[in-house]
Amino acid sequence: MRDPHDVVIRPIISEKTYNQAEMLNVYTFIVHPSASKPEISDAVEAIFDGVKVAKVNTLNRKGKVIRNRRNNRTSKRSDTKRAIVTLSEGSIELYTS
Image (cartoon, rainbow, N blue to C red; front, side, top):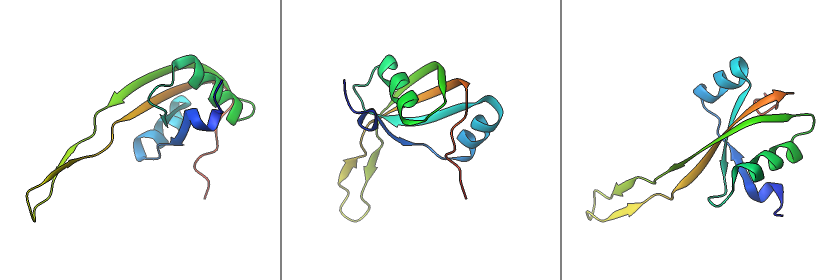
């Protein structure tokens, strides 16, 4: 089994995810591209104490193709995998001031 911090890379903090966390107890993370749903669930429960994961949804996002205006070369942003985690018990304090 991999280290939980290798599976869950970082949380996504935006206005939409902040509202989902407050209202629905749903959190969004960027995860390792080869991570499975049970691995993500176990990693979130291991990293954050006192939480119980009810459901994990995943999605793969393709990186955008970026064009350089100066010399018209194109490059590509990296592909990412996101996990939308619904908690049944507990909460995660990501948004501390």
